[in-house]
Image: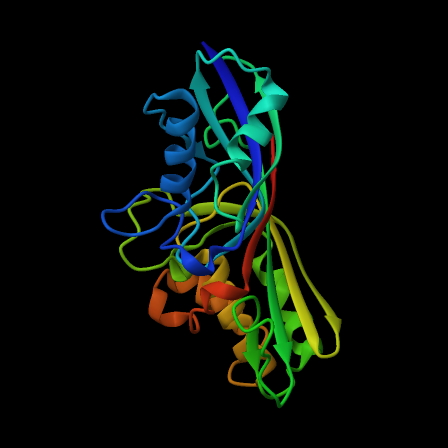
Length: 244
């Protein structure tokens, strides 16, 4: 039995997220169905994290076990024969027997993409969040340090989250501005459900002068989702890298 590690890219537009669901297209279902066609075995796959409906990935990591006599590099072309074109295997490799895509991960990096312009995007309408008015990026930069470090992120946790431990460490959070594009980049040891989208939504409210930069510290202390801002839509979010 071999443990295989895949790095995959996908456009999440047509999917109800990563996790397999009844009567819904999901990334996990597409991968497991492709594996069945190759091996004629039902092989469960594990991902580094469960991306939500509409969320994209540039570097999602997946692991599974198989006794199929395929060289590790052959899994990539084999899977491409059965996967839809909006899911791509970037690499396939043999991993140590104790490797697990989720539990072996040390940190993850996400990006969130915004376009701030009067006209709505046509080609990228499912890949960026459109905001018709410019944001005060200096105010956002002033707010960002309040979120870095180790904190209880209950105020930024999505509803119906089943995670018992709300403490996460954000080691990097930055904003790159190239008019009209804005890109948030965030690295953490772990993330709560919708945490990145809730952070971005709250920071955009700072950029719209709906809240002060120093209010982010109070939001964290509140440990109450109602204290933070809106949830940014899923289609601007990308899982870019998983570090082991």
